Image (cartoon, rainbow, N blue to C red; front, top):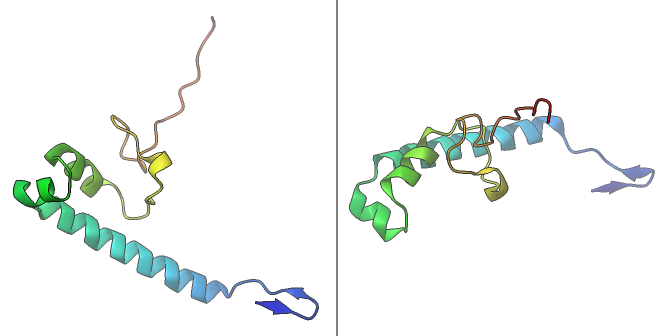
Length: 87
């Protein structure tokens, strides 16, 4: 939305409500995914390991596929940065 004097910032309360809804939906989807049997997982093209890994992710971690990596820490699916020492 624009205002005659320039763009109007989004309503912070609306943003917060939207964020909370997204988190609740994500938590519910991950809970359901974690409860699916192997037959249903195969039907959607996932293995038990992949489904378990996704179900364990915290609700605040987004669905951006660039941040989903295998063998990572549970912290939003991102690998920790470990600085290299002397080479």
